[in-house]
Image (cartoon, rainbow, N blue to C red):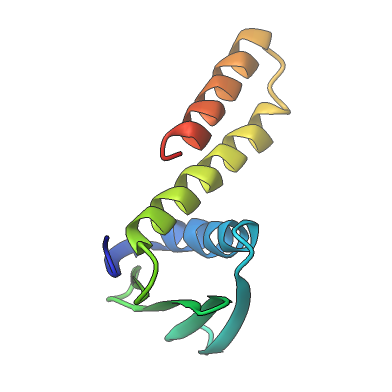
Length: 121
C-alpha cells in the first residue's frame, strides 16, 4: 500500500487531475473540502469518509509545471490516483467521441474508454 504519491505535471496534467480526482473521490463517497489556496499558488484539499482521510496538495514547480502530492494513513493513494486518471481520461474520450461522425471511430473511442474504466478494477 502506498501512503504517499508525488508527481510533477504540466498545466494540462494539473487541470485534468483537478477535474478528475474530486469526481472520483465523490464516486467513492468521500466528502470533499477545499481547505486553502490562492490562484497560481499552493492549493490543499481533504477528502473524508468516516475515519478515512485523504489529503491532496498542489504547488508551483517552476513556471509551467506543478507538483501534486496525495497522502493518507489509511488509503492506498496510488490506486486512488490511477483510478481517477483512468476515469478522467475515459470521460474525456467519451465527450469527444459523442461528436465523431465516423461509426468506426466512435466504436474505437468507446472501446478505449471501457478499457480505461476496467484497467484497475
